[in-house]
Length: 192
Image 1 (spheres, helix red, strand yellow):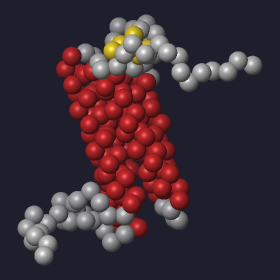
Image 2 (cartoon, helix red, strand yellow):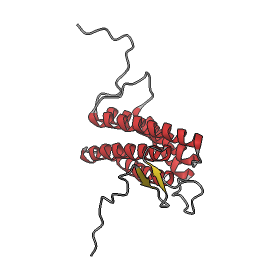
Image 3 (cartoon, rainbow, N blue to C red):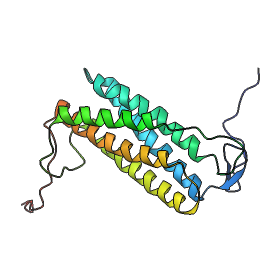
Image 4 (cartoon, rainbow, N blue to C red):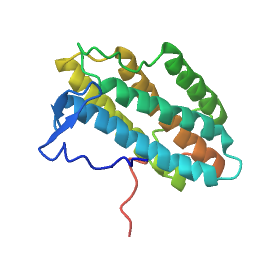
């Protein structure tokens, strides 16, 4: 039985292999884009690990598992360069619609927003807020890539909804596990 190796040494010169076998600089816009999606996915995984430890928080489990798998699909899609003979992994309109339905459900459960909220609260909400901001960065990287090269518009749309889902999930975590949203107070007095 042969053992696969984690290290290949092929990236030691600053390039990486795309899905079709072509090489790209590790600093290219394409690699930056799918790398940012991968980072967002790691934060979602961290949040999911916390959800698995929470009693009765199955409301977030299924959407976050789905999100992780689709974020991987997004990374795979972005790792196939345009004009490649390989077809990229697809993101379907139904994937975006599912996120929208979950966001609507979480917003109904958490109640209307009455103020801007700070990224904090319970630990799970804080982790989800970090995942959200990394997801927004991935969205910016994909937008930059799209300005220079072809990008599946559904990938960009999915990332946009993914960050909205993570915001709604953070609010849900604060509503169910904490004291609700952490409101922004622009006039907060200087502590004594």
